[in-house]
Image 1: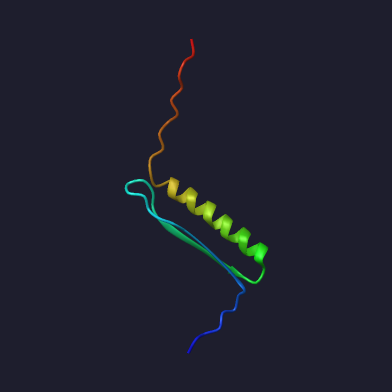
Image 2: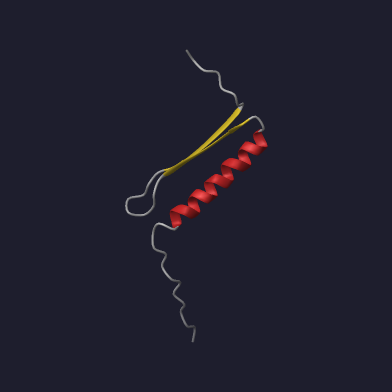
Length: 67
């Protein structure tokens, strides 16, 4: 009863949650064209990273005066 896959290429990125730092997530892209699957997986990964950054506070940059 195994179902045959309909795609040739599969890329999975997984990022574990850091304790008190970030959320974890998993990104998966499937398809028949390797280049398109790579682009899709990378774009999804970057979008996930941006979404995770929004969930924890960003510290303002501290500028030091040079005398």
